Length: 351
Ligand code: NAD
Image 1 (cartoon, rainbow, N blue to C red):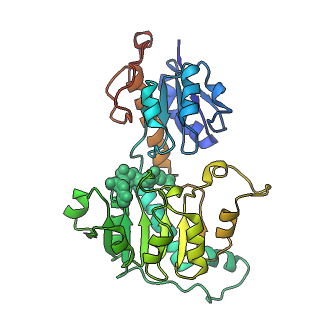
Image 2: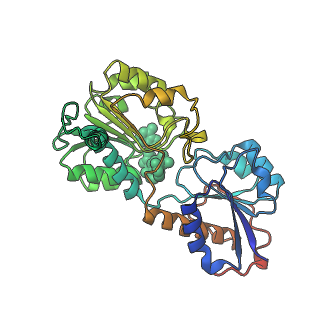
Image 3: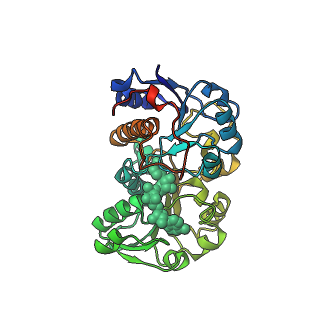
């Protein structure tokens, strides 16, 4: 008998990479792909599954976890690093195994952050459209040279560190803020830490966010912190949309204090990103207002999206599942204690 895994929010590329990673274990694991997200309306589709496999915009709050528990699901496999969308306390109470893929390709996300920043700075997004229309003028496309500028890296974990290394290659001066300082950042002499965010913001020409979304970091960039930024500074966020108050960013853009913003993530992305809404009326007025500014760039949460990252996500997801099934210690487990998988002996999985 194989173990059923209900896989939510899948696109053709997810199916391709997961199917390839699981190919050798086809007799043990039965992946059932759904293209829609997991939420209270769809949770019944997990019936009969031992595990659910989910992505960034699936809902794993207390009611959904309770419903999963009632359907007999034991494990939650995240195909992402962030777990701000999972009620871990509830998951632990219910005895769920929860594991993420903590580091599938920090360089992929860091490279994309710098690419977004340079696109915004050098106006490549506008130049692309202009040239296609046969307009080769340069008015409005003036950027600044990155070399010698000060970049603020907020969060020096895996991605922030990779971003700092790239910025150093550009010849930037790097200031960082992180309540937990990185030994690597210091050992590699990538830059200097500031004791508080406001001091960092007041000195930087560019600011790149690389910290997780928690209760403490929700709207880290708000009316007050935006006011601390240097006039004309550019802001990049590839971390989580909730780090930024969109309303405050719109006000800072309208007052011309903020020089521009590049977003790969958006606080209201849940019902929109990863789906085609080109024929719909989008009701999110803040997002639509944001996209009217010439100095705003929005992408649909794609910083992770490389061949290498998709392969790593699929293989680590398989390994996490195997650890759960075999009751092995899982390095990526996000809960302290979960009930050992009761039927482990029924599944002679060898990984
Ligand atoms: P990480 O856990 O390795 O590092 C996060 C760092 O942020 C840690 O060093 C932590 O101490 C620091 N931090 C916590 N609170 C902070 C605060 N208030 N101010 C400054 N720093 C703070 O995480 P990571 O792998 O580097 O990921 C960073 C972010 O990128 C996460 O939010 C993750 O969800 C997001 N991410 C986005 C994509 C994408 O495709 N856009 C892909 C992967 C990860």
